[in-house]
Length: 459
Image (cartoon, rainbow, N blue to C red; front, side, top):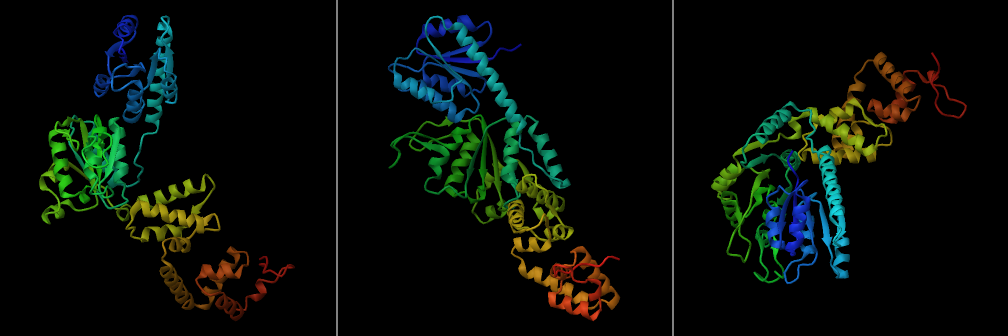
């Protein structure tokens, strides 16, 4: 059985040798005498747990710096502090971090440390299982989308590390697909939205900078690309990227390295690139707005998510799912007319617009059911609703007398004699219904109850 690899970081070589000797029967031990070497070891991705001292006398970085590095860049990496530090302030700072354990160097700490390591590894396993149980699943009823994800799964299980380009209109689920890819691969996702990063700070945000490289650069900054080392880097809205940044991204993808602003030596990165856009990159290349070589690098594999209007199965599926989420288990439903209205709309904003529409419909509805009038109101399509009811009124007027009578009676029975609701259901004005009731001589069928409200007679 393979042993778990534990990294021990301490400037006391005697402590490192002692730990390696005593614990190598159960664990594989790797040692580092300074923080810089420890960070390099951590980049290989095979370490299961870190044991770190706090005090590194004479070094630029101490144990707190390594703890913060782990917390920022290594998700779910457990660490233990093994320290005899007498600096109360540093100990207090360490204890503010989410430690697995704090073990004091006292000459008899071997078994305590062994138990702490076991505890840390169990916690890591539990966190990984919890993460796997929360894996992103692209929910869909669309045969088109299901086929896309079957093809994607086939790619992700291959040995290919090629770039992936996701095409699709805004709101079709491109970002969600990127999350699916990162979780399928079991790698951390770092995202950069090229449409929202200011042009002036884009290079620093993506590639990082050295302290003093420009006005305001008071500290070193690790760029997003370097943060994605051993992970997945998602370039959202790549079509909005400036020409200057396009050239630097091309180098990063080709050479697998980044050059922070103000630095002369590039840093190697091991990153899977995913890009997404709602633009047509072919047209942008023809117009001279996007580099052909960058497009070719990004589009080794292309997946296009269809718009919601081409996925009618998902319209009803998502609408019901969103309504259930909003009602928090309370029973709500759509009338057939509402589903018809939803499927008749073109959804230029796709799933995002559908989610917002259903939330408005839930708020606007005063009953447990949502009909088409609520959907039209939620879509701000009042005129369409009016036109529908005008059409209903014309159709009603052309019915023969016997059919009119039957429809009126059905509506009155349905709404227990409530003429206002019956008129709305029939698509006619309340006063029109009142005149029809008198003209058809059916007033005697809905006599007044004792409380003065209409009450249907029993048949």
